[in-house]
Length: 416
Length: 88
Ligand SMILES: Cc1cc2nc3c(=O)[nH]c(=O)nc-3n(C[C@H](O)[C@H](O)[C@H](O)COP(=O)(O)OP(=O)(O)OC[C@H]3O[C@@H](n4cnc5c(N)ncnc54)[C@H](O)[C@@H]3O)c2cc1C
Ligand SMILES: [Zn+2]
Image (cartoon, rainbow over all chains, first blue to last red; front, side, top):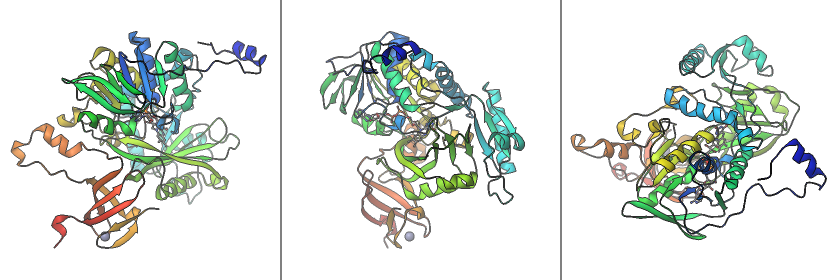
């Protein structure tokens, strides 16, 4: 693998940057693999990487029907945080955050993690009480999180509407200093490059049509590039996961909805944290290019179409303008939607399902970008050992029959 | 903005409607014979159909629960009709 450094950048300048190697090999599928991962989003690619790195299993393919990162991994608003409510969730998301903190170095690929902090802003005394409760839970769970008062919050986000007639006056909220954003494509490409370097085949343009099993055990997959044998499959296909598990007769607690993102024209630096207002449901950050990147809640109609709908656009944009009237001057540059896999308790589903050798990692819904390193780590563990890691065990599908839901929508009160 | 047809009110804005559940999931009875797995299946598991789907929707403004056939990829509405019980 070609090392990326200031020196290599300098050297390649002499050849007008025309001699860079492709970051990952274009692979054509072999006949047999020790493990196959369906879905080349962040979770699938990270799974390939950790299978090779943590478990020495390198005869692995990641099959992606489109191009890697073309699903939600390349469509999200890149907010990373671990301020959840339940201990199970904090263990999961903080594992991800800790791995993110060392990721650029580990992958020799700059994922542009920017820990600029995140404020979840309250505008009523009741919301402040909820924030207090979550901040307490975070501290009990051992992650950085604190209650922030009105004055400090307004100093952090000076453009926030503090007029007398402001509908959503900022009373303070929960602050997590380690939260922030990262570059979504870089996460996908960095994992792909490092995995490919260790021998993992990244196969783009390869759609899985069918999952084959025999005597209760996985034996392979059928794809547009032919049939491939394997005894172990990990599915990390977000909204497409239910249709894949239905091939072996397994239904999942997943509904698919569109989630939208919006980007404004670029402006000079004016917002140096991530902020979500509980009152409007809109959240926003500023990208390195200067664009405001923002989003809000789910579209209301279950769908598999990767596009957004107008009523939610109106809600999100009006929310943003209540928070930052000054942003009303900006033009909207782009808007798009991704199909997210929503679970009743807003927590992922990780673990074995159906025939022996089949494992899933899905249900991240509106908030799985922040979890990519952990999702990959845990699915790799399942594929390599056949057993749960202690962090993934609570997220097994059996929690629905056991009535042991991890209800983060109710717990942390935040959809993302 | 998408428009949905309520069998009683006619075509209305999507914001008046609420998705309830995929159709064809009878509640398992009698309760004493229902295992945890069967109950979880009824309560939580589904198909998340890609393409043609048959679903129960609520028109919140008039309170009618009804059946809608639609395509979840193209957003085409194929038909909407009263639930069998609501016919008379
Ligand atoms: C608008 C928007 C904003 C978001 N904002 C945030 C945020 O700020 N923070 C955050 O943490 N999360 C956010 N998310 C959620 C996050 O993007 C997802 O949870 C995460 O990217 C899921 O990653 P994944 O690898 O599981 O899925 P994906 O990246 O969707 O990858 C799944 C892949 O599987 C492939 N696939 C599907 N079926 C098949 C098949 N049959 N054969 C082969 N390949 C197949 C798909 O093509 C796709 O590339 C947001 C999502 C959206 C849509
Ligand atoms: Zn009606």
